[in-house]
Image (cartoon, rainbow, N blue to C red; front, side):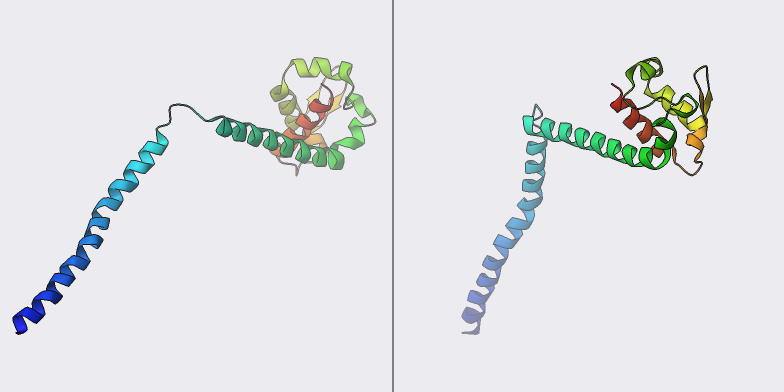
Length: 147
């Protein structure tokens, strides 16, 4: 009798293990398949492109906002009044020649300082604690106002 009592329990134990073993065996295969099928789309979806564009636009807006803050706190004193030949934001004729050299050149001169025909720009506008990124954002902000 003991043999027959033990045998049904043994069969139940084997039957209970089969689904677990099957799931453990096929789960990595299923995960691998779903991952690669999802990653193999031939084209970017329009939604992905829109998200990328909106991220870039948002990043640009954030940089312009940060540039405005730096400008108002550090640059406006000279640039709003045109001190030492500082071009005023929005004064297109004053910015045309400067923008012709490109944003990189304007930023470099603003960071390192510049003495030219029309005026003087001290390094970092005379505020040595400004980071290069802050100066870059401020220059970008002023240039955007003058386009």
